[in-house]
Image (cartoon, rainbow, N blue to C red; front, side, top):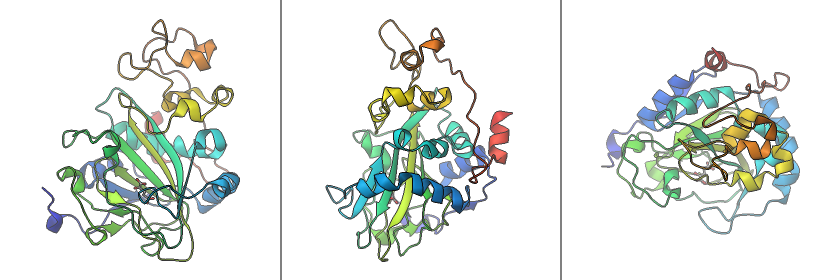
Length: 307
Ligand SMILES: O=C(O)CCC(=O)C(=O)O
C-alpha cells in the first residue's frame, strides 16, 4: 500500500513546549513532525563554532547515497562537548522514551552533521530502518526515533529534508521520486523528528550555500547501533562523561542481558569501575543540567520528564 493521494500534504509543526507524548503521537500518525525553535540560534552558532575544525576536515561522500557534494561529520560525542547536550536534549529524550517505549530501553544510534553542498542532487527516498539489513519490521513497530536539527534555516531551495508524511504506514521497499515528497522547511534551531519507517531523503541543494543539519538518531537497544559509540569515543573521554550519557551511548544492558561483559557484568563497570555492582538494567546517575547561557533552557517537556 502506498496511498500517495491520501497522504497529508504538509508536516505538522509543534511549539518548543511540546511534550514527548505529543511529539510521539504525531510521529506515530504521520511518521514525522517539526518542533519549532527548540534552541536559540545562538546555541547552534556555538555548536557550529566548536565543530568547525572537524567540519572543515571532512571529505565529501564516497557514493551518491552519501552524497558526492555532501560532508558527513560524525563522532560528535568525542569531538564536541556541546553536541552532547543536543544528544541529551530533554524534549528529544522525552519523545524517544515515548515513541520507543515498547522496548525495554533505547540507545544512541548515530551522531553526524550532514552538510549538503551547493549543487548536490536529491538523495534517493528511503527508510532509515533499511539499515537493519532490510528486515521487515511489522507495521507500527518502530525501532528508530530520529532527529535532524536545522543548523541553518532549512528551505526547499537549500535541501531541506524531503518527507512523505503518512508513509510510515506504507508497504516496504517502495520507490518514490522527489515530486512525491514535501520539504521539511524549518528555522535554525528547530528539529525534524522522523521515524525509521517514514520515507524521506536529503533534498537537492539548488542554492549557493551549504545546508547544515545535526542528525542525531536513537534506536531500540536490542538492535545494533549504526555508529560504533564504543570506538568513536576513546575510553579516556568516556570516563569523563555523565553516567546518563554513557547509558545512552550503549554502556548498559539491552533488554535483559544484551551486551554484557565477561561474567555477566554491566558494561558501565568497564568505564566507571566505581559503579561496580549496579546490576542488570540499573540506570544510575542524574540527568546533566542543560546550559541556559546558550539557549539550551529547560522546557515543559523536561519538567514533566523529571516529575
Ligand atoms: O540530510 C538530510 O536531510 C537527510 C539525510 C538522510 O536521510 C540520510 O542520509 O539517510
